[in-house]
Amino acid sequence: MKKTIIICSLLLLVNCSKKTYDKLEINLIKVTSYGLEDGEPDEIFGGVRDIFVDKQLNVYGNDFVFKKIKKYSNDGRLIKVFGNGEGEGPGEFLLGRDICVDDEFNLYVLDLQLHRVTVFDSSANIIKLVNLNYRPASIAAINLENVFILPSFNSGFDELIFKYDYTLEGKEEPNLKFGRKYTGDYELEIYNSYLYGKVMVKDSVIYYTSGYPYSIQLYNVDGVLLSEFVREVEFFRPPYLKRKSTRYIRNLSGSLQGAILSDTLFINYLFDVDEDGGLISQYFDFWSLNTGKYIGTSKLEKNKVSLSLVGDKYGNLYSNSSTPHISVSKYEFSFKKREEKNKNE
Image (cartoon, rainbow, N blue to C red; front, side, top):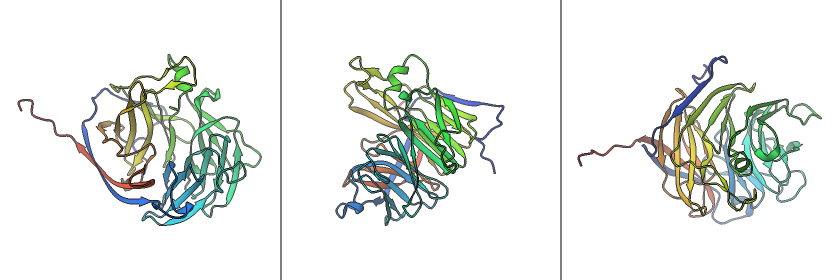
């Protein structure tokens, strides 16, 4: 059955909202942790850069300290370790960042410094090494025939997302480029910041969340824009050049990334900082994937969740955690509309 967000290709649905924030109340109950407090290097996390949950609910954590990806069963048992640590050889990483797992349980790892994609099968064997002629920012995949990469904005391309077929030997160029990057008054600042956004895929729909300005875009596998969610956020401010150099970009606010929960809900994870880079507030924006409507926003408790965020089909939320030790945490998640106080009180 087709999802209601997938609409006729002749019609483009753009949903806008100016509603105020902090109208929802969320409840996060921690139920499971992945990664021991003490143990062998493969049993602990030195630091977590990205998280993924596959269709069997196995949990993957990208350990940027030990330069490996660790796979756990949903109840917290270590299953497999991918990668050979730090280096430039096959299965080694210098700056591994985004990870994803396709429908056939192949694991994809982006290395931002090596400009390389490493693909492992479920047994941790390397089945593909792809060198890129640009710096990648994010990756998503349905299978080896449908791989989607978001280049860093300062790579010099006008298109937003590149599609690859990794079953074709000897062909490392994309077979499709689609979407358009932001153009406007703040191009220089945005292109040289880390606010590239993130690409995800669910049921053959490609989701892109923009770091700044606010935009959630949905495409089909042929690169056709199906829908876009946009809204004005009261605290959003563009990045700026702190010292008149692209090496000193100050990001004041934006979206860190998005997450899909229970097939019907999309969360956009927003941040707001002061002029010195100190975190002021974090927020979850909620959108219905059934109706394409903005539901509301909730302000998060400080340090409740961290940079990496992913959901599963049952509505659970996963995030990296630093307390009581570095790990990945699973939360039971729910939300409701915040009760408004009586004006006469």
